[in-house]
Image 1 (cartoon, rainbow, N blue to C red):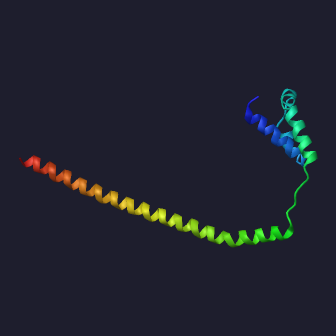
Image 2 (cartoon, helix red, strand yellow; image 1 turned 90 degrees about the vertical axis):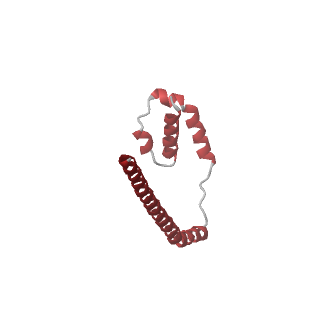
Image 3 (spheres, rainbow, N blue to C red; image 1 turned 180 degrees about the horizontal axis):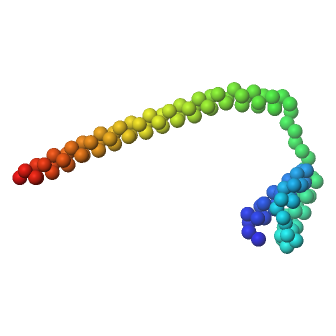
Length: 118
């Protein structure tokens, strides 16, 4: 069995341990696959039995929410500013390329006319 499938099975089994059994049903696990990962399933069950859920203090949750709400507008403004810079520099680059193209065109044209008359 490949590593990706093992990860999928273990993630679904872990979800089932915390009350989301539908994840395991959706994978259509074969008996052979179940046997291959039985040790990992047993380990995850032992860990689940030993570990206790952690709930952050309410004041932490509230302060984090406040901090994120204050930071969101700044993050959007920063992204907008960066996007604007990219657009401006792209336009500048396009303009320079156009000018260089026009100069090359006229130089080649002048050069070909000079050779045509000689």
